Image 1 (spheres, helix red, strand yellow):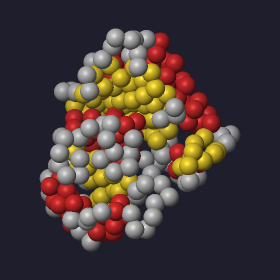
Image 2: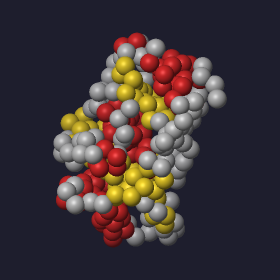
Image 3: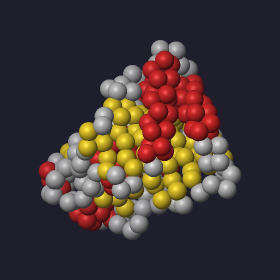
Image 4: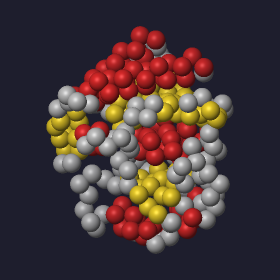
Length: 258
């Protein structure tokens, strides 16, 4: 496991280095309405993929920018987001990250989330805890929703009547505050570090969540679907929290019907 975690960390740092190099020279296009992608996304992904494929040629790969490789006979799959928070990156807002998770037989076992703007490296391995820059981290002790800092992830170019928007507005009347930041990977990492108390979304992809979910779990938090059923990284249904407010969060969100 240590070998996998070290590889994830090194690959994430390589991707972050590429992002820093591209900050002043990237070009942007829309994958869909309000859904941006830059040259930096592709450059970071290429470096990460090449590094990990050299180390683990039999492993499978799934990454945001059209990368899907089944691998050999291995039961390992790397799940990669080379730039989570592209819109923030484009605008120079320093809340974006590289996210690399490793799955074995359908179970998340290692993860790295790297924030290159602040040189913060979040790491987790199954059964080994979570860390930020080599120091152990744990979720907050918040147990009341009205004392919680919540984060929501809304679909891009969403309609005002979308259930995700209505859930956001509902949560405003229950939590101490509700924010929208633009990087799911960093949101999850910051739950693990005790800086955020809860986060939910029904519009994420596996690469947005894989590493961060393991961080939250290994830091003592709780991860499920919004209805508290078992989380599945391949399903766009996530509720992550410090734990003490998890059921209350679920109840508030489920009270808003589609």
